[in-house]
Image 1: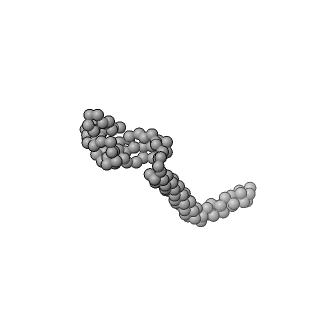
Image 2 (image 1 turned 135 degrees about the vertical axis):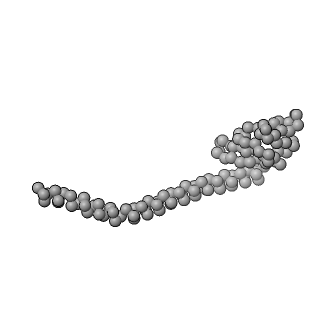
Image 3 (image 1 turned 30 degrees about the vertical axis):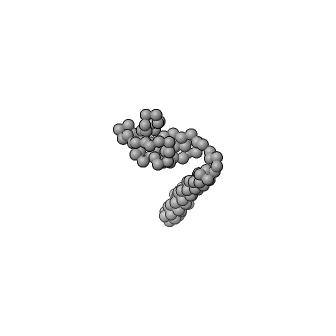
Length: 123
């Protein structure tokens, strides 16, 4: 009986010893895999940003550029932060590009105000 218990536990002892030796290697492999996965995710995000940039550069050069619905998400003294929900893009519309009027920033109300007949831009 004693011999059979020793024989039954011997493989477990071998596996435990083997695992103790390999744990540092497994940890290093796991760290490498995690770093590689993060790099791949960052590369994917950068590629999407680059494609969006290329698209909008072509829109600037187009004779009849595409028009998108936008949501004003913040108003600053230098412009509007807008989001294009259709394409998941956020950007700045600088006040100098608002050619229809001259706007003044109202910090208390966080909006750009033009003359009485002009629209008020706020979120």
